[in-house]
Length: 247
Image 1: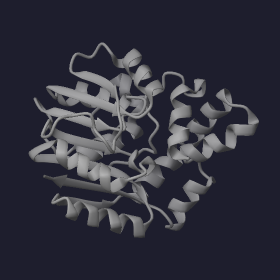
Image 2: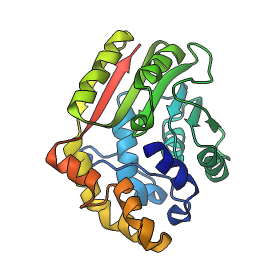
Image 3: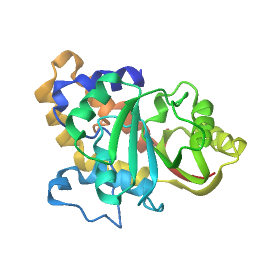
Image 4: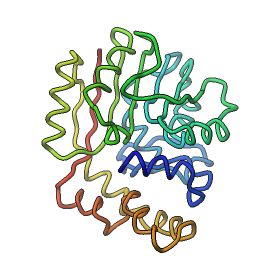
């Protein structure tokens, strides 16, 4: 279901040139942004939270699940990696990203499968993954692939939502792959606060670009207040987590 929605939203006119699809993050130590980025602050802060403890300058960086490409574009502009590659399962999303951000010299987008990454062993210094892995049918395969393509000492920055039982199983998968867990944090409350702040903005955008029949499904996907996914966060049925690992 999640994969189908991401494919659909890659083509959705309702989102226009919008570069982000994540739930956002309220940051007590917010990054300084350029004026043109301020409208996307809460979405950018989720990316910043995920990678802020890693040195990216001059590094080979991979984003798995790059979506509409705004996060990769901001990171490539802000942190000066030698090269940032955004990989996504959706050909439509990759086409959109290359149209919107294709002029950035240290950034490229490619189509590929997170569970079978099209890269050689030990190709990257950093791999990050933001609110994407809940779509993957084999999380263990993705983690193994992340380990494979990272150089020794490379960093894997991961953030996404799961129920508590599934999150515990993911931690076990990290251990099986010999990743060292450097940080493991529950950031649910910061995500809920962001959803509260941007709920009306998302709802307005969806109403302008979708028909009544499918509108509620779009709102649920976007985590608008009152939808099942939002209520699951509030009730504690689902948590949002952040892990930083080192190979």
